[in-house]
Amino acid sequence: MPEPDWLLTDFIQEGGMTIVHGVPGAGKSLLVQDWSMVIANGWEWCGRETKKGRVLYLMGEGQGGLRGRILAWLKNRHTDGVPPVHWLMDQMSLWHTPGNDYTPEQHGLLQYIEDNGVSLFVVDTLAASFGGGNENMQQDMNQFVDFLHEVQDLGTATVVVHHEAKRDSGPRGSTVLKGTADTVIRLEPKFDANDRLILTTVRCKKQKDGMPFKRFDLAPVSHEVDTFRGEAVALKYDPGTTAEATEREQEMLDYVLRHQGTSWNDLVAAIKGSKSTLQPLRDRLIDQGFLEWGDDGKGLYGVQPEEGERL
Image 1 (cartoon, rainbow, N blue to C red):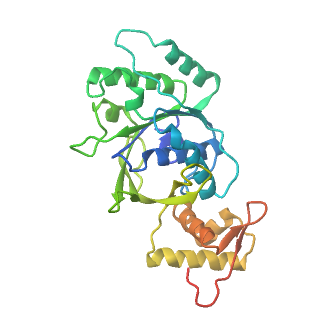
Image 2: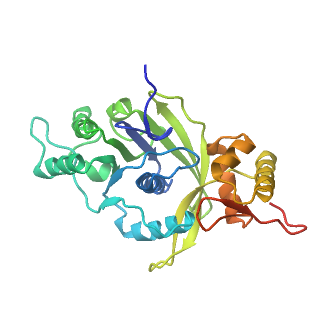
Image 3: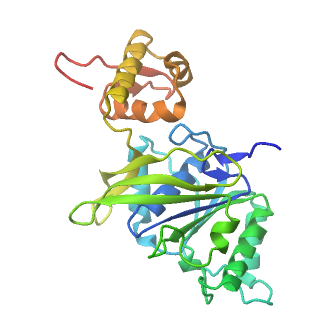
């Protein structure tokens, strides 16, 4: 049997369905918006490879904060170029009455996806896109999933952002959704005393055709942005401050200092690690000012820490 083809390795299969669920405030939309923008640019994410493709993002809620999130994402990624994601800023029902044909809006959406070769279709959130259906009823969830399968038949991957059931750790509503998904991901957040997110753990709850990825943490990073609020948040991989991580950072910095202008691929080969492990450490060194990209955006250059300065 062939290995699955990935739009974003470990998280989104080409033509597959991924469910991302968690409690309110866990960072679900932040994560999926990050994925959407790296796929639109063809960039790697936490060391995982992507395939560049067109992204259509159905944003049924939270439209008012999108501009700030994009500006924060640009700062987080050290770039000026806004990714070419098509944001559909409206609520639209993907559910249809059993026994009836799709609505004109649903037919139009399918036609747009086919005509434009969309690689990824994001539904954020399921509740905002369920129209008059009842997500707890198997028949209604089947109708919703039926539409997503029509999208997948066009070769387009789907990602559904969904809320969590109150009594367990699964997606809310009928189990049909989880049963049909290729990948199910749960975000497990930690909040401070003021209910602000301080960390969210990304955990694989189902991987139909591949090996489940190891859980990892993402931390919110606040950036000053030109909005009425003045700041917005982006998520960043948190490699922790273990002795092993610090040792690998020092090893990376020492190599770059000896080979100024080295490429990222050459650095990974020299350190003999995986990109998914080393990229967060590389990014932290860049944020701390110990590494920097050359003018061409390809070569890495090192800055020797001053005496007494620690990584």
